[in-house]
Each structure stands twice: as structure tokens, then as C-alpha cells.
Figure 1 (cartoon, rainbow, N blue to C red):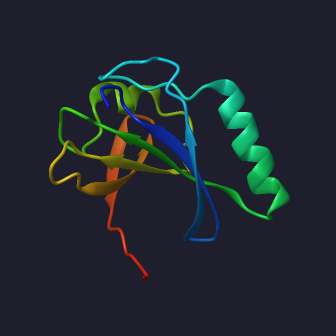
Figure 2: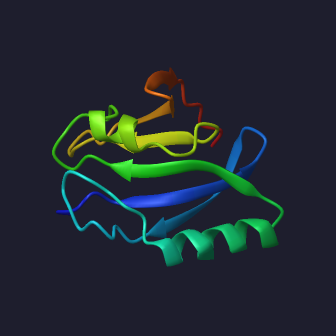
Length: 112
């Protein structure tokens, strides 16, 4: 807070196993841009641990956990799940597949 938070998740198959918080280089409450050096650090860590980039996380600190028009337009990884957290107090987390202007929600399952 007050900026959108962001991070990358690594995993194997459909399992998300590792979350790496990243800096929002845009420093905005309405947009995120993961700092390039954080992307490289996360990808190296995932590779070292036998994982791949599986999800991109960001928050909407003043809104709903749905992709904005900008999120859809700027999505660059069509095979990677996008996780969006909504505004407090509920802070619901939703997953979406974004690519080529399309949005498909993915139900999230937690295995405590």
C-alpha cells in the first residue's frame, strides 16, 4: 500500500510452490510493472529449484480482483496464470488466463 503489489510464482505442473515478492517499478496504485532485475532474480531461482514461472501476482488496492483493461492489454505471458488480489478488507484472490485480449477465470484450489 498504497501501490499495487506484485510478485512471481514458480511451480511444477499445476502446483504453485514458491512466491517471490517483487518491486512495482511503476510505483502506482493503478498499474504495476515488475522491476526487470526482480524478474531475472526470480527466474534464476525457479530454474535453480527445478521450477518454471507459473503465475504473476498483483493487487488492486482500491478495486475488485478482476483484470483491468490495462491488465488485459499489457499481458505478455499467455501461458501463465494471473492472480489478482482485491482491496481490503476482503482481499479476495482470483485467477485468470489472459491473452490476445481474452480473459478466462480459473477457479483456485488451496491444499492446506
